[in-house]
Image (cartoon, rainbow over all chains, first blue to last red; front, side, top):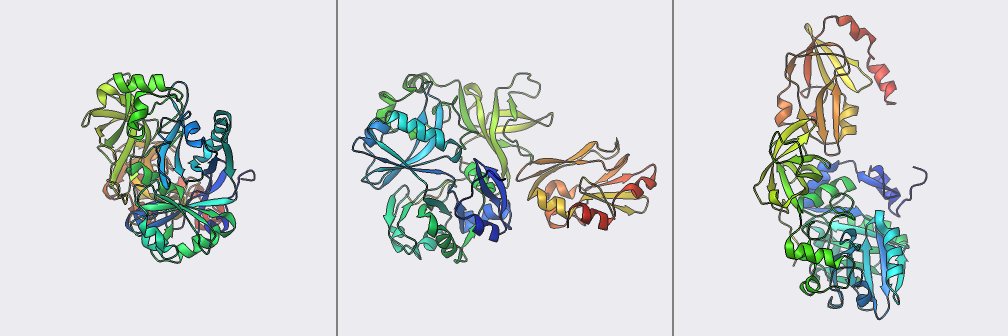
Length: 366
Length: 120
């Protein structure tokens, strides 16, 4: 793994028994000594600490930043209030998704967090697409996520004011670990925080959080099963350049005004999907048996059909559900709740039912 | 007890051979969430894929360690796949085989050789 980058928390991960995997050019902890299942369940019942420093942190600076970014995303940013964050995605001319991201209005600038695997392309895309806005990649900060019902109490021991924050608030707080850029958000379906911290004090902050018995380190393995239970998309699996936001069932993330008129890439196709409906839709899937239906599993309308009506894009055992769960795309005719389908696993057709997302209600502090 | 390079253990019990996966394999797999067992009664050849184990990470096969007939399966694993992580060398045996020729076991690793093989 010689060419892989390490985050500022690498040594801490190793100390906690991390098993490392290469991920988007970084050597990242997939799990610690406790294992994926325990880490997942701990996040749901207490608080999990995740290193997401591999993700891209970008500041967009300039008086026209919000207006200019609106030319790249279907989201409304000029109406995004200071101190608030929003889920967004960059689209291409065909209305496909180039990446999904979080974007915040910090008052003086916009702050975006983008996927690790896409960050180079995203930054180039922004530099090319934002005529007067300065695009600054932040490379001297780490990013931690603290997620779960006891996240608030754990972080409040270090930064008391976070108890006042609501879901999707973002604030800067002075601390013993330098200026922390804290948002009340995450990607697990739990209440929690994402904390941007100066790289040289990241390990100290992580240690201070882990000193609380309520907090345990959680790797990328559990991060994946947590986000799947929460019905959240993984870019590259559930979303890609060929999926429109309407197909991906992400219409909720496009603010009303921008569904009607839009000067963002792919508006015509997205509008067409909004008005006439898409040919396929992202749905939740509940296999009847215990066997997980993983990404790539073809889905059929009946046991003997020869042509698939869709495919699984994410699938695993859901530790908090106690059963196999999947998400995937199916033809709109097969996307209604309760539709019985068949997934082909190792040459066998196994029954699976279209179900609602998320698999588990989220517990955001709204 | 004998061991294979595929991280299975084999233990002779009366005239049958009990097969399971090693502690090392169960650790490497991570939390097991699904086990698909074969129908008992079938003749299998060495290296046939006879069992599928799915962990939180991925699906893996258990290969038949030797030629023979699978005469019994551990159905407890269907309802409690996590047993593979809890007690891989005991309660979580996977299947029992009848061998035409027990001497094939002589060609497998003993515990010391297996430990050496996994670098323990």
